Image 1 (cartoon, rainbow, N blue to C red):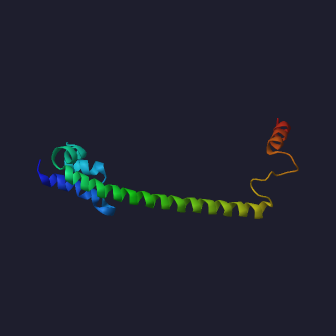
Image 2 (image 1 turned 120 degrees about the horizontal axis):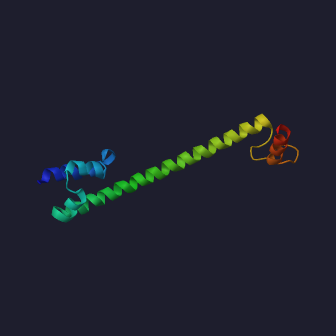
Image 3 (image 1 turned 120 degrees about the vertical axis):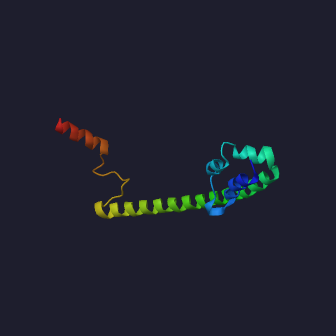
Length: 117
């Protein structure tokens, strides 16, 4: 196997936003294992350089994913507060407060079931 398929497989691994996954790069390599070919057989220095860049890219993606998760959690909490506020304005009590004259919801359900059956 020449050097061109190897270059075609591992250069796109460090291509930034368009970077291939390992599975996609392995398809380019054919039946040979990408890691084995780069690390053990022919190009240990190239493998080390590619993996250094790759780890830096993956760390950046991880930081971006954590930031996105924080934004989604904040939005979820904000909409929960809005939903609770609308509930309070509509019904006059908060969703987590018991409704009624000191009876629990279970007691009210039991009384309803007794009347029905």
